[in-house]
Image 1 (tube, rainbow, N blue to C red):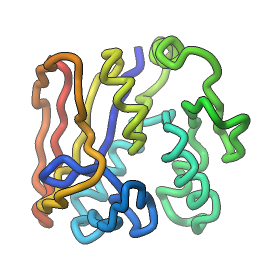
Image 2 (tube, one colour):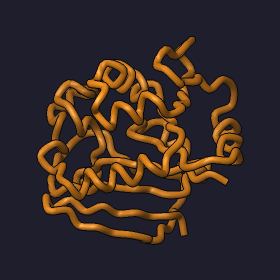
Image 3 (cartoon, helix red, strand yellow):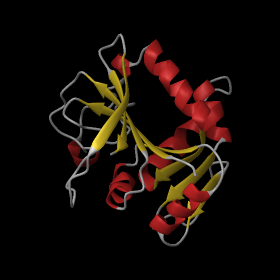
Image 4 (spheres, rainbow, N blue to C red):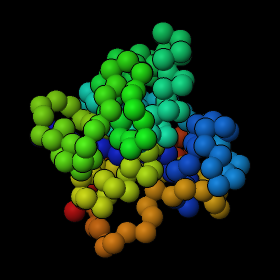
Length: 193
């Protein structure tokens, strides 16, 4: 059975919105886009490479998919992230998209929870979710997440979309790995207890 792994860049106050670029996601008047870039170092780079090596499929919500699909297909061919993201299978959860154009992308049609459960039953490596905050809420609610890899950076943003939002019940987590980065970021890996 494949693992569904949620990978998120978070501020200390739990904000996940727009870590990579000032214009990535300004919804709600968010003005701190690109906040994670100063904390990227070799430790985060090697951890990202390990995660990519274990991943043979991605699951995206519509907004994250559209952001990624507008950038990565046009990134330099020698960029290791571009190569991996472009070549790897991508599944897109959306009720509004009619088609997906980024190579190796498949639009999930029908019941999302059922489709994700079926994907997890297939042979293969990890199915990784990047960003996709609204999608992650559904995956949390339906207990589909096997692991969280959280890059917790030493910054307080004070506003923005949070990873963990209103939940219908408490959920215990077990810390299975932790790594400090030279930038002050902690890489924390949790699994549901």
